[in-house]
Image (cartoon, rainbow, N blue to C red; front, side):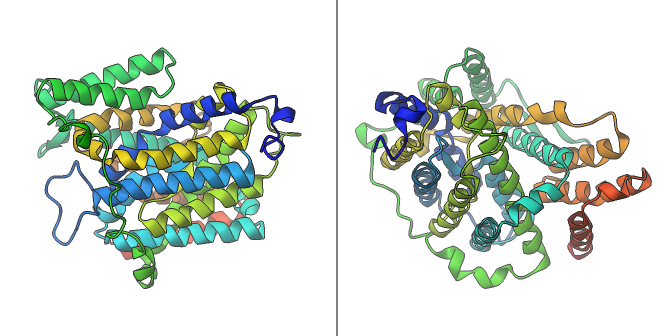
Length: 444
């Protein structure tokens, strides 16, 4: 085992790797509760006609299983100390844009996730991944990440009741004296404090403390005894295999854009996370990522597995940097994280105390963290600033990640051509321009 994971070469040991795996798990454990709440649209009281909720318990199980499979693949195949789980941005896109916004059944949305995963596997195995990565301008990649952060935070503020609908101004500030809003506000403050103190797993612990305060104040019904904390693993029956059963429903323009968005966001989120964590761990060689193909294969295979069991796109987590900071250097760190996801399967009863007010702070804080790339966008160049700004602003304002990407990718070639930088535009960007223009035509 030590030889396989190259402990001696990397200067690590079992104790260090276990603590690193535990740290990574705690830093990303919030997704076990946020993902089921997102996909089941728990924060939405009245669903539009024809829209149904996915089973929250089944999604909890699917989240833990996909996290375990993805982390295990990453640890054993690619040998990187990186944990995987359903991405919070794509979880929000799946629920609030695809299901709630487009009215696409969640079963068909799962088929879209499966298709994107299969395409990702194909791109990885054929080597086309490099060409596509190089085709998308760096500034647009950054803008997409920031826009998703704004969108997630917006959903968090809504779930907290801090932002509410208003007939005159579309949105307005909510009743800050409401007990549930005050609970969510407490959650935001305590999470900020914990992260400011560099406490590993601050988001997760913030959720736990908020839930405890909610139970103490009577805003949340406490679990009854040990059975309210530890219980049977929720059945996967409501979601398992639905991605295959509805695969024939994905062949239309709406789903093409959905699949492209799933693929695009996972594609670059994964690449960015791999490079960032590997650099932090000192695993980069000659500015290149060793075993990059295996790492991307592990990520794409995890997405396929996650879609089959019933959850949104599985991706590499930047929170893995917490485990690396704790000393994690080998794939054994990810194996430990995978084992903890399996153990977490038995704590599904806690879903009853993780209300929208409890998960809202996590969404807001993750939104803050994702917005850090704003500083790297070339705002001083108008031809870059316009598509970047429109990408970022359109996501929360249209309540759609896909729409934000589409608008940005339409304006990019226009501004670049007008600026005389036509030679810098990759031909793939023209193809995406046409696809997204057709998307708006069919959407209307």
